[in-house]
Length: 437
Ligand code: CTP
Image (cartoon, rainbow, N blue to C red; front, side, top):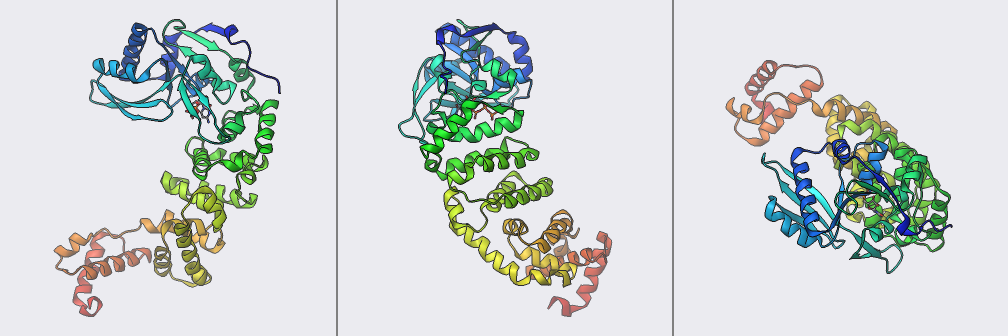
């Protein structure tokens, strides 16, 4: 692999219209005011403040960025203490990696969370472990990064105010659409970069450079991926859902599979399994919260493999709950088609929600019923509430539950529609004492 780290004093400098850049970021006026203050203070303290990473990359790609990394070459803790004498806000969180999350209180009373980072170098003591970090120069802060497209810097204060610094040919790679790691051991040190490289390839429709494959082979050779902890693999796969669009999930998983990454990290997956899962998530997309989607994704991926669950750090207790639900479903699924609607709904509601969604992947007969239930039937509820039933003279709670269920069944059967009809039905029930006893 050719060494792509050139003579660092010879880097490319380009003038940038800062106003236009800030406009592109489309910041709230209060965040802009905060940035202004931060720049003034950095100038006063003679410390270099700059944007780096995704935000600069996305500016050149003209892609919206949701968050940005603001980096200080200097003592960020002291800097923030001084800044908060002038700006209303506080440090919310400080990580072991010299990064800070701060909370800014704007004049309008709104608050904003901003990430500030110390320019730092990294020391990896062993492959696939988290690095030790040390404050350093902006150059070293660039050298610790994953891909050249993430190494561009946009200076906010002297000596590079309004300047784009391109130390490693990041702009050229951005223009050509190439994902290139900085050195051969990049993925040995941090195999999570492979997942990042997969995300960038799919998101931007870029190509991997020859160095990408060389670095990948090195990581395979040294068995670096095997050493990744379960929670780090989990977090990287979660980003497939969190940071990328669902329509890209199929490509992301296929690339991960085809590169042999699942196998290397110790996840024995089948292609049909995850393709089926992607289709199911697409169908469910609008019906689920992110947390629910996340659960269906992970449990669907490793379904009933204790080995898979252990590798991702998922709970075996939870796996056993899924297995118990499967036993319940297995014993009844063949009767589903013969059940009436209210009976079906009653059956589906006996199974916990997430196992029901995951198990639908493996029982075709269940899938369609679950979909109907999610999209239609579970949303059907009586208009009368428990409170209103009490006002109608029904006192005990089990009775109330029984009536509400009865009303819902009647709705499901299409026998009633309005609140008026519900009331009439309840009156009748009250007369037929036997129903309530
Ligand atoms: N980074 C890295 N290696 C990692 C994680 C992050 O080198 N394993 C560097 C990259 O240079 C990246 C920066 O840290 O640009 C910030 O990381 P992050 O916020 O995760 O990435 P973004 O570039 O903002 O990418 P995304 O658009 O996916 O959020």
